[in-house]
Amino acid sequence: MSCQLVSYILMNGRAKEAIEYYQNALNAKVLFEQTFGEGPKDDVIKMKEDELNLVAHSVLKIGENKIMIADIIPELPFQNGTQVSICITTDDIEEAKQFYENLKKEGTVLIELNEIYFSPAYGMVTDKFGVTFQIYTNRQ
Image (cartoon, rainbow, N blue to C red; front, side):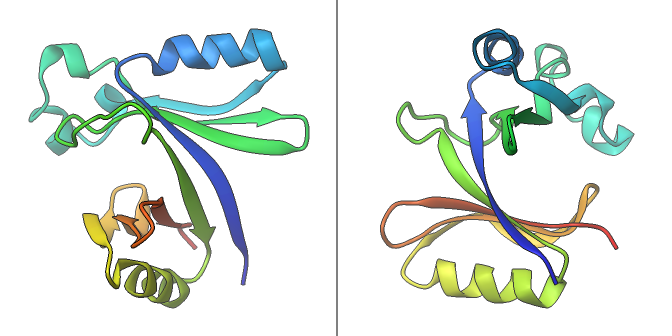
């Protein structure tokens, strides 16, 4: 079983700009980048034309560390000051469920923990202290 905590930065339509900035400022290397338009066709047809080129997910390596950057999911509200969350990445669905259930107690669920095209168990919750966590399970 493996578990990592990774900083996840949510942008409001400026993720591509931020990625380029961190490449120049911090010598970041892009390990992965996908736009919303490159996602599953069933999701793409629901999106507005100007949302298709927004970054759905990216992983950057800076030194020995990784950060993730994406544009906020269009239906979620964006608020300056809350754009950095912690992504808990695990290989174990049961562990993901446990983390999710524990964090949502006295917290606020932003995205229910469910299977999604990129993860067998993904959810987002703000805990009782106002810290937002994304729970992401790797595909086996």
